[in-house]
Image (cartoon, rainbow over the protein chains, first blue to last red):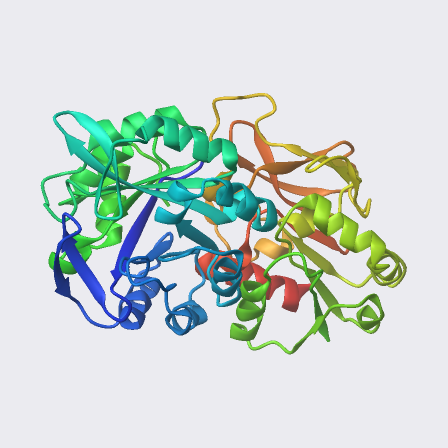
Length: 248
Length: 204
């Protein structure tokens, strides 16, 4: 039986690992290479690395960092940040990434999903979507503001049709709040598409991870609690297992 | 020497990294002539069946494989699309020829069950304990899969097969004599995957 994945999400500002709140307030947590190495020794299911300043600064994520991290990493590695060309993807895959996450660029140029997936295969192309919860409704958040012209469910279905192999849903409203994940958002997205969905945002303890794990998502992405509490990815796996959700 | 075949239709860096980590000498090859003299062959697979098949048959690699694998009985391990290429044919991106070493065709995973999430992506357990390549690997150990197409075996006589459960029995590993195929990615499957690769290198 396919296991639900627990995926540490590592956010970078180009050089250092960050913890964010609502994608705004930040704390610096040191070298991404050290952080990734720790996760590797903890035998995690997978790792996602996102450079959250790359797009804003008009550059792609640093390739040397990826090479270093991929060096002794024998698990799937997804990398995102500032990707806007086939060459960006090629470079990251050559450096050891298995999948790339693309966000802002494909909102402006959806056909890039099709182009990239036809070259590298769907399994390699993760479409990342930042979501704001507002009065029980969900909106796409892009380039620092709510995008009211693009409806969330329309967009994720369209991304699937264009060849996205997986969705990475970041709940910006719950980011770093440590108040629990958005179960409703996770369930809604996972039931709208038939590609795997990774839900990220708001998990404050292993039991929160299990609540998300009960929905049809394929994976729960977690960032803050691995940095600021004693909880490990394995604690989350145990919580899911207790809730009768298959984990590795 | 162990030869790793690069059909140049995708990135095979992680297979090389894993073999390096195991401390094994290898040669990365890109032309059929270089296959001569192999003690073992790994055929990694990324990209689509169509592009890999096209490369295999236009480059003449198919003849070099027949010589090494069928005539000289050199052990070969196909991984993911590399495993699928061992079948008679595949339907991804139109109907394309495979090497025909396993009596099978490669078809879309959810052709029967439309509710399944595709690709089959993530960790799933494989029960292959009594098989050579699973030596030292416990039953129910999980390996990392990522694929939308799977091998459907039409004649299983003489084959060793290990399945994984994804809506139906999906072929995770198949062996026909000196020919091995893994649908999962051992190079992405942490320590059990490294053990599987080491078993191929040391025990075959």
